[in-house]
Length: 315
Image (cartoon, rainbow, N blue to C red; front, side, top):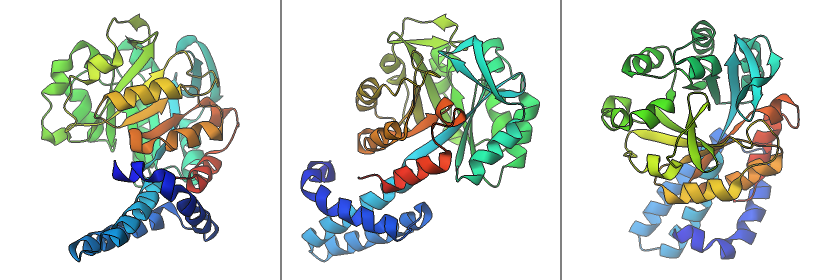
């Protein structure tokens, strides 16, 4: 990308610009509006022959749009109706953090969360929605306040239609995509950008059925089968780090993101604000967001602090 190649030259100027923007208290919503306006100015400048001016506005626009687009997803993993975190995906190694998922969701939303990443852990293992009632209550309670990305419950088209009709914005296909890739390929435009593919990787290969079954298919080999026109994004989870606070697998995640045409959401091992900043710095390389779990529950930082850190990060 042109702006990426010019980054070494523009970095010092834009870093100073970013600091000024943060001090002025420019929010993500305002940044989005500013980015849109700057894009129009850049287009007009090109049309008038002012190419250098257009380039400047284009690069500044990208700074603002990045702040809006990189998404933080607080995780709500639900088991037996409670918010839990697993260690390395092991259902026997759980820690219960909140008996009331509604209260937990409210805590994230009050701190600025625009999305919730919800997984029915029991459903992922049993192949059907076990925590359906509480998830429906979550989607109904917060349908006008937050977007929901839901996994662990999707095994057929009926499941997809049901949850889309119950205020869920996006659905994660993991086991279904692995075992029946033709099902995903045949989804029509009705499901445009409503589907997320979840690839949970252990030793380079995808695990399924709540991480209990190991396949011999790599994440790259699976994803290359799907057309980006239907798929919103791909969640890349490093099982060996999930719930461990070991830090992210940036090298592996970035390698995967660069190898496919779909946007990637990183997952597994986030332990610090620095992990989040490092991922956001790779937005132009295809990493569009990150799922945060145990680090929030163990109070390594708050969701509000993570948002603030992203707003202050360099482009």
